[in-house]
Image 1: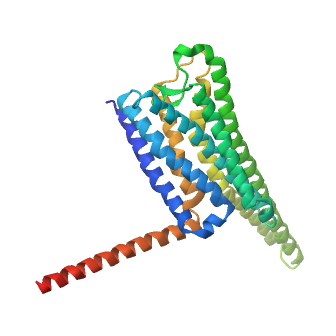
Image 2 (image 1 turned 90 degrees about the vertical axis):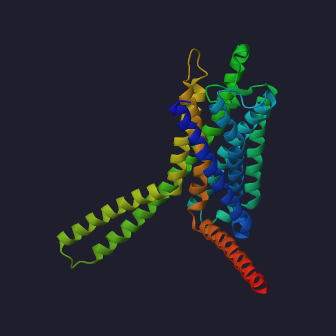
Image 3 (image 1 turned 120 degrees about the horizontal axis):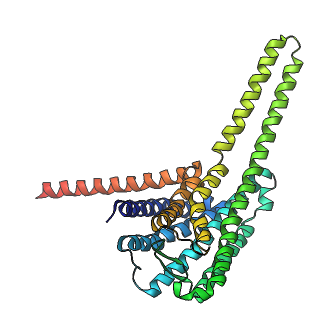
Length: 342
């Protein structure tokens, strides 16, 4: 085994374990808290975390076996099922991210009318569309028999055998349409939401700036040099506030992780459609690992760094530790009593 293959195997194992733990934590928080489930984003987060969890349980182990053995894991039927699951779960996860971006845009831009613009029923309809959209592409892939083992990615995925080059045009059209209707659509929605939120932040900063300037102008007794320094300092504070808000905003995190993790894989899948283009195996697997890494980062970006989820998770851990401590205390007391009786 070469060092690059060993590092790739370790990366897949680490990503799978982290993804399982974090997504299970999110689902556990949703199961324990009725308040989190009652909010509209909770529906999208439930859909996203479920897709990520299934990817960690189904696709990552299959890719690990493909990297370790450099061969198809198990049989053809299993590989087709894994490829079907990957197409469905990938599209469903991306559309869930787009829905979350849209939800946050409505919450920030229309805070007073959010409850009327984003209702529980609307969220369920969006999730239903996500499932139908994902199912349409995954069923088409299954019916056309375009799912199989790809040596480039060491995994069971959307793939066209070399013996069926007559279907290359249809396969290329399907692949391009799949990525543009999932990746490109989600990227467009996230960029739109981020720019709208940033515009709202700028307007708030300008409003604060105008109020400050008006207050300074009313103070006629201030020396002009002092007033100029105050205005210059206010401008610097406004610029720092905009940069801080933009960098710390959840939207920037969503956009950054989405582009970082998905772009290499999607671009690679589109480039390999070109004739006489060969994708190196190590690059294909690395792009796949980056794509898998998104499943482990989503819980932190969307949930676990938020106070509501942290509070619920801490409460769950405290209850579990408290019950274990109580059980150990009872067992210890029982053992001591038995010893004295004996």
